[in-house]
Image (tube, rainbow, N blue to C red; front, top):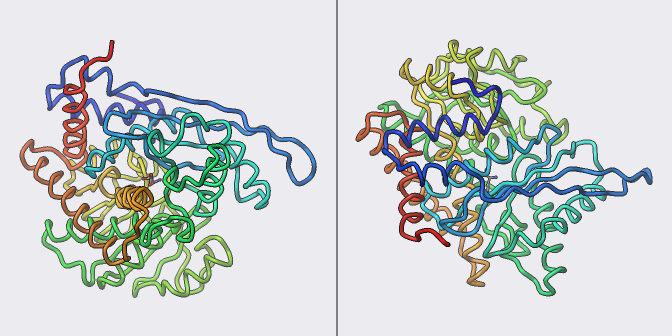
Length: 416
Ligand code: GLU
């Protein structure tokens, strides 16, 4: 079935494959394939040049059966309601696979934050939050960072919400700065989770992570930390590409120098510690591990044939199209699906929400140990289901997630 470029269509294809194996009853099937709430808002902002711009924003609460909606807010020119809905659905399955008491949500604003001043970004954030204020809250919907949003944006979210309700409410959003209720380890958590599942996958496939070669697409929060932590385990990071260009060094890239370069230039492109590389070339490299950690629809039928990695670990959400995924699976490439691979971020968001509500904060060691335990539990459950049902890891992850959400839906029963 073609998805006609719809990201939500791709999500439905993945869902249907698992639901069929589970023999999911039609009623629950219908519930789980419909978003509960889709909110569209217009956010007027006075720009620095005095003119007023109106930005379109979305917040989708896909499913709140297991708890408050949970999921990031992205700022990107390419944001669409279709994309945000798919991402909110993926958050639902991700939280269920991670075994944390949250539903799935996602937000997005159509804008180009790289071309906006700090003041404009703050004004946009506050107006967007004000427009969705009735829908969010520690018990309702808890946003977090995503593509091109960060801890400062989360601080503005927290402040705007707190001003509206008349008291400081830290648990309304996660991924905040440490000083205002953030959790130690949250910034690194998605990358740490990617490292953990990559290590577990290598163990399962029977190859050493030490000396294994790694190529990454994306060097933002997820890509850079994944690279750093895998390098700490002795892996060799040989290639990184981003929106502008890439760099290759067969002997291993110097990540400290590369991070410095990226801080100044906002891209890995032009880094002198390796040879230039395009995104197309990245996917053809003879490496052990390939980590797409940028945006959706990056591994398609155009480039899947040339992928030579043993394992693809999806740091990004939705980086592989359903066709390309089938092709990789048939060729014996192990794909660790997004809803498992990048769930370290939301798992540590859960820890942050717990600490905020408790008013008592954990050490970084405690956070990392709990994350390690949660990621290994999730990886184990998915692997076990993939062996039991003889399916790929993505279908297995959906089986775990759908089972958990469907069980609670049945137990709660129908309201009215
Ligand atoms: N944006 C991240 C994700 O896609 C984190 C969401 C969260 O922490 O709520 O998983």
